[in-house]
Each structure stands twice: as C-alpha cells, then as structure tokens.
Image 1 (tube, one colour):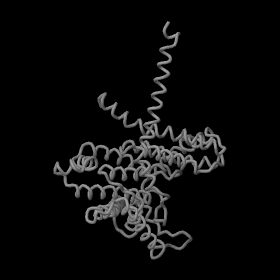
Image 2 (image 1 turned 180 degrees about the horizontal axis):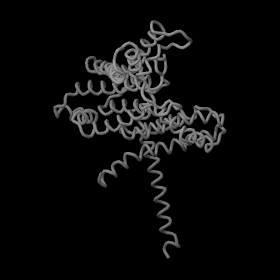
Image 3 (image 1 turned 135 degrees about the vertical axis):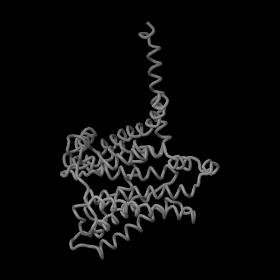
Image 4 (image 1 turned 60 degrees about the vertical axis):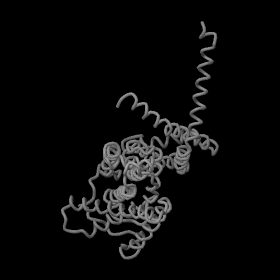
Length: 363
C-alpha cells in the first residue's frame, strides 16, 4: 500500500476511533454520576476480557458469532441494503443445521459437516433472497420485511422445537446431534471451536471479494450510485438478489457454527441478539470486513468483561450495554463526532499559537 493509501485508511479510521473514545468519556461521566468509579469499571472489564489466557479465549468465543453476523450485515450495506433480518436468518441456519445433523445419516463425518453447513447457509440465504424478492416485486422496503422475517422464522422454529421436535425437559430444545459432526475445539474449557478461524478467514475472503472480483465491484457500484450502475449496464435486481442471498447465507453459517461448535442442538431463543450485535459491529467497522475483526473483538471483550464486572464490583452489567449504545449513537451521528474533532483541532491550534507567541519561544 502506498503513502496515499495509508492516508485514506487513516481518514476512515479517525471517525470510529473518535466516536469510541468519546463514548468512553461520556459513559465515564455517567458512571461517576451514578456513583461508581470509571477506573474500577473499565479495569474490571479489561481484566475480564484480556487479563489472562482464559479471559482472551472467552473473548474469542463471544467474538465469533458477532463477527460473522457483522460480516453478514456488511455484505448487505455494500449494495446499499439494510438487512435487519440477520437474527432470523441465523436461527433458520441453526435449525436447518440441527435437522441435517440429526436426520442425514450414513455420511462420513467430514461430508456430514460440510452438507450440514451448506444446508444452513442455503436456508439463511433463501430467507435473504425472499426479502430481496419482496423489495423487487412489490417495492417493500427491506428494513421492514427483514424485521418481519425475524418474527416469522423464530415463531416457526419455536413451534417445532416446542412441539414435534421437543425432547423431555424444562427447556424447549431438540435432541443432540452426533458428536462426530461437532466442530473441533480449540479450547474445551472456553467452548472455543474452529468457528473463530472460519470467521476470521471469511473476513479476509470478503475483503478481497469486494476489492478484486467483478461481483464485489458491482455491489459497490449499486450501493454507492444506482444511477451509475444502471448506466453502466449492471443488472441491479440480480445484484440485490445476490447480495441478500449472500448476506443471509453468512448469517445461516453463524447459526450452523453455533450449533456444531457449541450448543450441539437447537434451543429455542438461543440467540441473545447476535444479529443485532452484528449491526453494531459492522457500523463501528465502517462496513470494512477486516475492521469487523477489531470491532467484534472489542464487543466480544465487553461481553466477556461484563461477567467479571458483575462478580468483582457488583456493578450492573448494563454498563457494558451503555458503552455500546453510546458508541453506536456517536458513529451514527457523524456530524456530532466531526464537530468534536474540529473543536479539538481548534483548541490544539490555539495552544500552538499561544506557545509560538510566548516570550520564551521568541527568545
């Protein structure tokens, strides 16, 4: 990368970095007002997230699903689409992965894993493609239809898990899939599977996909300027279908990895909001797949640190949600962050001018 490229990357990183620092400053004030020490709060979160090897592995475990859902949302935004249906798509992927894992018998373990993941991605992709169909055929905004799809998918899967496929017990869940098709573990104690490696590889692949392939280029053009895309002969409807199928497929992959790498079965309402966390991850990363790695590591660390925070300080775990919420608000309001940056630059320039005009400097 040349000097100009580094400058461009630097400019793109300034806004999310400034928003994040401002979020920590704002939440520090709020924590002080409530009556807690910001140093104790942030110190406990950091130790719980990165304080030792087990803390780091726990952070990577929590990072895995939100990195994948962040990439799913990033794919949609590349074509100017808003896929809020990731939560439903990952549930569809997890449910289909469980069905294939339970009933597709007679396959070698490796082939069974491959078929299970492929089926889960296809299920999530079809949910995304249906949203694209509603947009193209009936001009229904994808924001609304994707939200509605979340409810539709979760109610359908909830019916089967609470009824025909339910196993005896207090929790609505299916039978466990075979141990042979569970993903290899990197840390049994921290429930960390090779899913984290798949997620990291996916981020790199998507980065080059957008930079180096014709389909990725078409998605960028459609997202930045549909008029230019139409004038260039790009098939916009086909790109929308392709984008939403890919976005939903990645969300379905997240569901499959969570089942095969952790749960071992489908549990009703298993997701604490991975799909919506992915929106925050992608937003903080500015739609860059590689930056999603850093932002998901941050959010994963906050989630891991929240547990230690509650144990060591008795402080509410909601402080972590507060930090996330303020950061996203600031990123979503670029003018506010830009004005703060401009204020900081003006103040810095005034200090420099004052130093230059001081008698000591003149001598």
